[in-house]
Image (cartoon, rainbow, N blue to C red):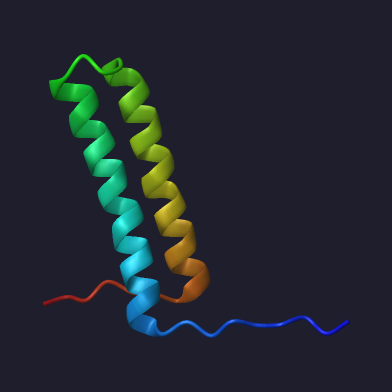
Length: 67
């Protein structure tokens, strides 16, 4: 059975990586400024999101634009 490959545009890949990074920031800020959960838990989840977005960006070849 052949493996199907889904082609995703460069803009969509950049958007997915950016959204994952943004989720990490939001989780960190919610942990810092509210009592929803402890700050350490928010920090750990944020680091996981940022690491995941970095790994995904490297795998997809998404580079930061310097501008």
